[in-house]
Image (cartoon, rainbow, N blue to C red; front, side, top):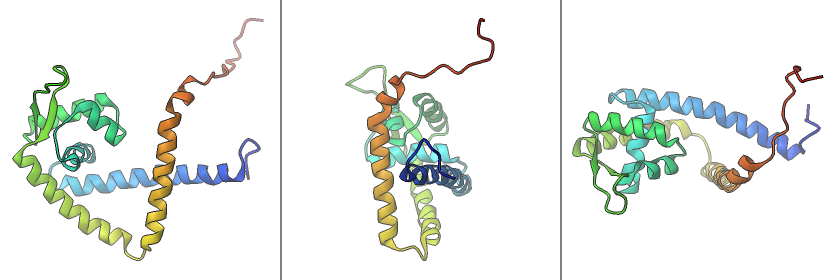
Length: 170
């Protein structure tokens, strides 16, 4: 039943969001299986991937922004990856307190192996889906992401109506 507070396109968007949440959980589970074979988790793989795909050293805040993650969780993950010898810290001439993070040779080797495994997995996953459907899905998700990023400030600043606790003074 449609909500009286949303248009039908809003209801469809809500279904997309719920489906995306479910898919995200399943993607993370699959990522844990793939990365687990290399002694990693999806979170660690995601951070390695951000640096690898950038093709250059990044700061923790840059990694967090690119991956849509909290800076604190990325910082903790980077610390673990540095301890494990997959990432290294480098001085940042532009900002002394925010060091750069780059892949070690071992980190590059593991990321390449993960990327090969991901390639096999993704080819199997999308078998039978039309490329045009995948491109449309990507375009819609990219546009929704762009809108979410643009609306971050306005959503955070909206005035919230207090919820009644039933214990108000009489």
